[in-house]
Image (cartoon, rainbow, N blue to C red; front, side, top):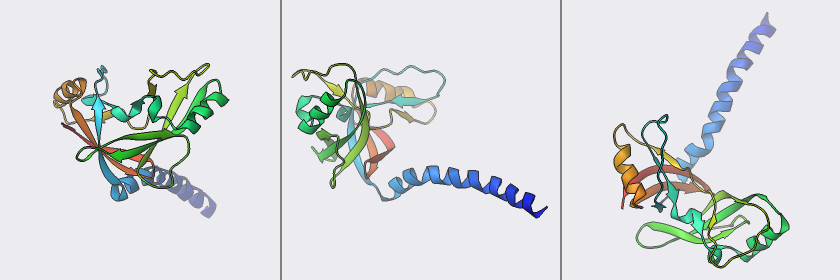
Length: 179
């Protein structure tokens, strides 16, 4: 009888511990991370099932060859296709807005950076005019009822800024606001 009770308690406690562990990193980032502001670029979302939200794409997620670390270019040549974990090293630009300094595949030891994924397919020839894309941040921000259309219009025009908490490469999207 005591054995069944212990199994029941374990079955009850383990899911609670797992759920708490899943929330630890975002909550710790919100509490101790540095707040930065990033620019968004226009995007046109359409999804009727999710309620009011703003679909976001960030300016730092699209970059040219000049932003690539030479070691990252060598890493591309080692594989034909795949996903590569990359880091966006950020620097403060005008006012409180941050921009992209460089993209590298090695985790920076200091400074402000975001961890993300970059996908590549087939032979990779470095073209001077080619734009590259990496996913560093969440692409949706849910908003209060009946405010999504206004923010969506601003997003399409590239007139939104996003406030983000960053800690050790992990980011939590806190708020979006007009420029």
